[in-house]
Image 1: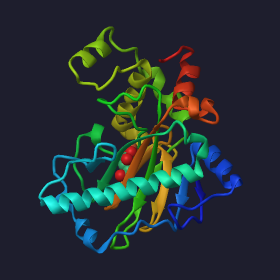
Image 2 (image 1 turned 90 degrees about the vertical axis):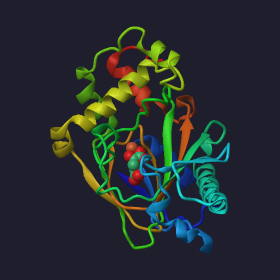
Image 3 (image 1 turned 135 degrees about the vertical axis):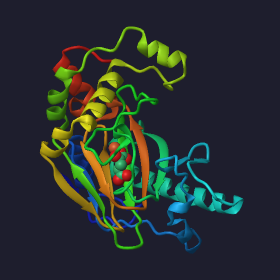
Image 4 (image 1 turned 90 degrees about the horizontal axis):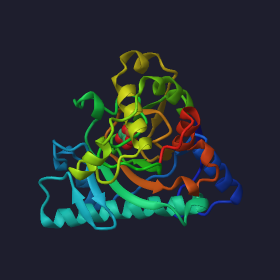
Length: 291
Ligand SMILES: O=C(O)CCC(=O)C(=O)O
Ligand SMILES: [Fe+2]
């Protein structure tokens, strides 16, 4: 379920035995946990540890490291905006360094996606069930189809008050898929083209995206499943980091405040063993190609 590393630096080099263990564990649906990998804030960044800079409409503060663009933030002066971007940029680089050194198998194919800062306490946040990450789910995005590519995320808890990030982690993807796929029908003919035409989706919603989104929604909607599915609580203390493929690992974030997160996108072809990918697992069960 979780594989622990004693890493203390974001630029640390790894033995090839650790690199092998990391890629195989991650692809096998485990979480790589770094209990001693803290992300240090600069004195002028401490003030961002407050929910007041988060737009109440947005779930997180987002940052695009390639374009140097910030969104979901409010009440920032020009100077503060520059400083917050610099903090997110530094985290983004740190996460990249860790991935590059620990998972060299991916280095030529992995693509840096967005960075996020999550300054709002999650335990009492009210949202619609679809957006509620307190319910067990695998990640799938309605407007951003990822067309089979893996979602790899690096998280770090930067809570200054000693509060853990508390997750529930559910059953393996294949079990999830076998449970929910029989209830899901094919998409309505022409719907994906229409969504694209109306720019509701940023790219074409493939069959893969259709099934992943349906699994995501149906998991969250199923109260009985939420309570009765095999699951385990995991706690990530402040000053710890973890890497997880959230399209594969069923997860729910129950409690905690102040986390940094970097998303990467990875083609299935870059995996060491693509049979573990949600794409190949769904194709195996449905006996048809999904892209
Ligand atoms: O914020 C968290 O701890 C995780 C939320 C979640 O479900 C995700 O980022 O995929
Ligand atoms: Fe999630």
